[in-house]
Amino acid sequence: MRIAFLTAPEGVEQIELTEPWQAAADAGHEPVLVSTRHGRIQAFDHLDRADTFAVDEVVGETSAESFGGLVLPGGVANPDYLRTHGRAVGFAGSFFEQGLPVAVICHGAWTLIEADAVRGRRLTSWPSLRTDIRNAGGTWVDEQVEICGNGPNKLVSSRRPADLKAFCDAFLDVFAKEQESR
Image 1 (cartoon, helix red, strand yellow):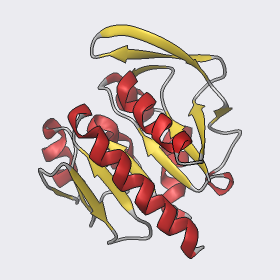
Image 2 (cartoon, rainbow, N blue to C red; image 1 turned 30 degrees about the vertical axis):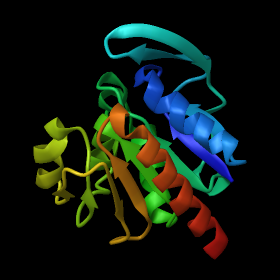
Image 3 (cartoon, rainbow, N blue to C red; image 1 turned 90 degrees about the vertical axis):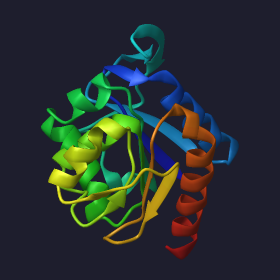
């Protein structure tokens, strides 16, 4: 399965990109780095610059139909930028419209809030997004991983880097089951 990893040109929390990416690759999937422009993205380790990564595809030049699922890593600046970029918001929202599974961790839910994709959904995130999720019509829970099937697709969410093992196991299981059912 081709899995889109959507990030801003800078600000993604590196471990929230690299660990799910490696887990997807190890499971035989094709992770694809999607961003808002060509070139390289700058990842961060909290507030410190970390590594850069080459962009594979750009929103506006690719579509959800060419993927089996979407992963939205966090970091504060990453989803804050994405939620102001109309094409990025539209790209994320199109996975819900197509009924494709989405996995989101930490602050990544801000992009889904902007896409109006959390209304009626149950999800977790970094605790500071609790009010944003509730105001957007979602139900926030403080769980390591939450899997919500109450909507057009499966939504896997997680809180923080410490939850990455459980997050990766959950989204890979959900994505595999969704792929089998198609």
